Length: 280
Image (cartoon, rainbow, N blue to C red; front, side):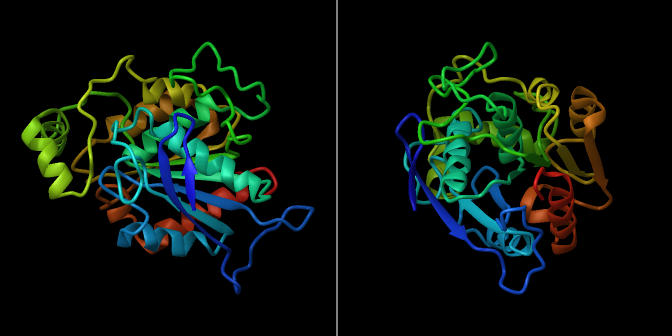
């Protein structure tokens, strides 16, 4: 499926039904939940780690995967977490048009920051589409142009707590890729990611500030203690901002994002969402 984000960018997306043999918890009307997966920077629907995550999440319901702008077969250029919230909103709205009552979002790294901002900017029950005082996405509003785009539970894996972090060698390399012409060429031809040349204007809602606005939507924060990009002060800052309604899992020996999330962890995430999301 090709979806259109609210700003007109074409987004490739894939829908997969729940595993036939899965013991899926259905709502009162017999509808299964759906997981919408938001990949990390340089990922796409076809990357093996994204496909592996989708296969595990199909044990708990249907799954939608998509490629953020500038990635895979999607149009546009990556804004590294800013306007990508519109891509996620389009995918969630598609899930609801397909008839799913319960939708949860799972994001990795850049996708983790996106699911946090999406949950803050698209709260349940808002349907006027005219935005809000804290809407930092130009023209998005609470609902996608094609229907409600709120989520019922949020999982952020390996997400940053603040923007412009350069405290690790891995993040300094990433900033070189994003901000330098030669780096963007490496991104395009080496990493198959097309990166926007403009700086953020305005700067998006900070991930920690977004986490503070998600309640009462259930939130799970997952982070590895060997993450080479973001040390443990990031998930702890997110958890502090989110307050008591958030769960924090610090995973021993885990590295970064979907590449480091093994099948057992993905299954635990799916089981958490099935317990916590309304209707699940």
